[in-house]
Length: 320
Image (cartoon, rainbow, N blue to C red; front, side, top):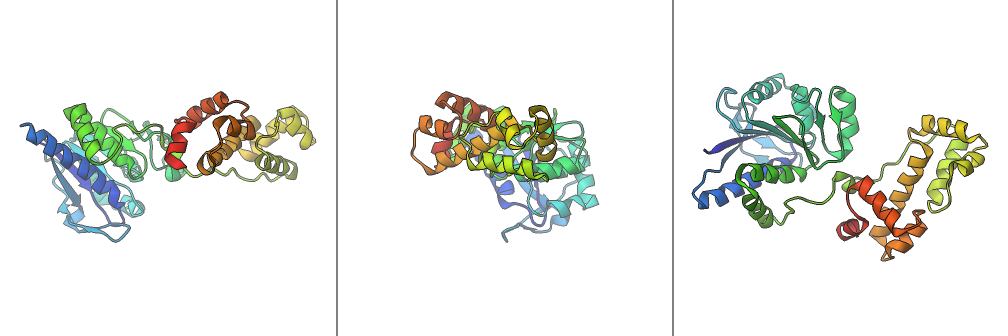
């Protein structure tokens, strides 16, 4: 059975959110078809069949949105800077809601997750989106639990959500693997020079998260001391003494002001310092661990895997 894939376009869409999944599904069709099987029919669709102008100026030809009652296997909702405007198009959102009730699965890529949420497809679900827009989605859709770490996640029996931009390719490869097996997905991945399953989550690609400055001067002074010397000893007792507070009172005030407990803040700053060292130097893990306050290379490894989902060695290979 040939599976119909509809990729929804709108003004200001991210080009790769459309083209990436399109290439994966059509590439899989070539592989499956060469072996006598049925692959995918992939179409870009838009309201009234209007040509789709991407955020970078590329224009794509599109078909009109089909009747939501027509058979469809997979609906892909891409993201991009035009997502905000697309969410206000009542006709488009109504079509997404209607077609989702009949489609086998609905896939969002990047900020396309907000389109899925606007259509009510993610209520009570865990979803991911581009790491930079996760706080905004959390604020706008409190019924959705937003996890900015995974490359993609199965949000419900029917709905999948992918992280930013290229993550749509990762998710499309996974869906091809579900439909046609690992060999088909691996062949497409190799052709695209991609991992079939890339290591780690999207936190490793995110920019450093700079925590807000505390309002109280003693707490700001503590923050600056930690950031200036991440490798120094920063026990609660020592930090509280710097702030001229008792350890218990300091911990409470710091957490209220900064939004994170002192110990977690120290670990975050040390992790960011280690990231920079791995990117910019050839020093050994042992040296970096000592310089950044982790003590041993093994402690650094455990922290990296827990916070970023990859080992320091993998991170260095990718970002050095």
